[in-house]
Amino acid sequence: MSATGSVGLGTRLKHLASSDRSSGLIMLGFAFAGLLLANLPWTSQWFVHLSETEIGIPNTDFFLSVSDWAQDGLLTVFFLCVGLDLKQELTTGSLSNPKAAAVPMLAAVGGMAIPPVVFLIVSKLFATFGPGAVGSEIIGNETTHAFSEIARGWAVPTATDIAFSLAILALFAKTLPGSIRAFLMTLATVDDLLGIVVIAVCFSSVNEWYWFAGIVVCAVIWSLLVRMKKVLWILVAMDGILAWVMMFEAGIHPTLAGVLVGLLTPANVLHGEDTPRAER
Image (cartoon, rainbow, N blue to C red; front, side, top):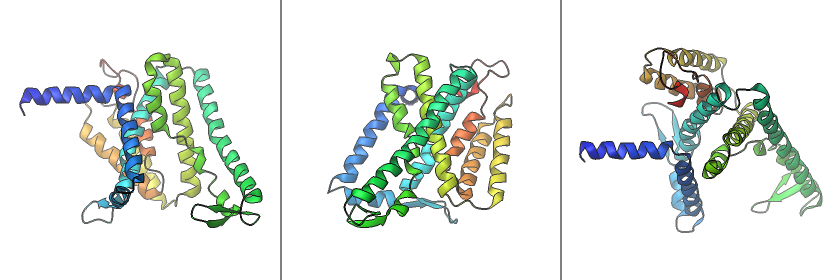
């Protein structure tokens, strides 16, 4: 491939990645393809085998399945972009006014609190009046579970699937005012983050304290590096990866590392630059 062709391909890929609409269509397309592969009888076993295949760092015990790498690894990059967008909106955008930011945040709290209540009510009604013995539920392959066991999953419906929410939002972004888009983005982001925090606190196995100390150190280093006049992006990337590893080892959902470093990135112009670093 010629140098001109490489530059042209790189430009097209950069334009594609910067387009919310195109990115949303691609994500929804892959999601639909994944649903087909997981449910068609002649591809489901292959799909399960692929998702459970473990990949890791040689000579270490750090191995994750392909499914975990996608959920905990690649999704962190998405949450980094969300954190950067949110920081920009909170600093210089439509949410820079505290009153404007408070409304979607309060809506997100309601969106997080109500689903568990609905879940518990429906589960209780099903356990009382549904098939099987009173106080138990029959789920899936005729397996019986006590209501007390089912109720332990109350935190699961708290999280909004922000990736799909923003992908669908991107399809209609041109027809929506910027303030509405910022409102919905903040609502979905805060709701999803609160849900992840609840699940991390209530259901994660929190490990040794020194991992948390390491996360704080990584956050401070990131904050300093991205404010330097000449940013050493290789060091920034290494620090972000280290923060991800420490969150993983601490028993916290590692995608929060993306949000953390995104919110720590300056959204104001520094050192006479043309654009804020949160927009790069």
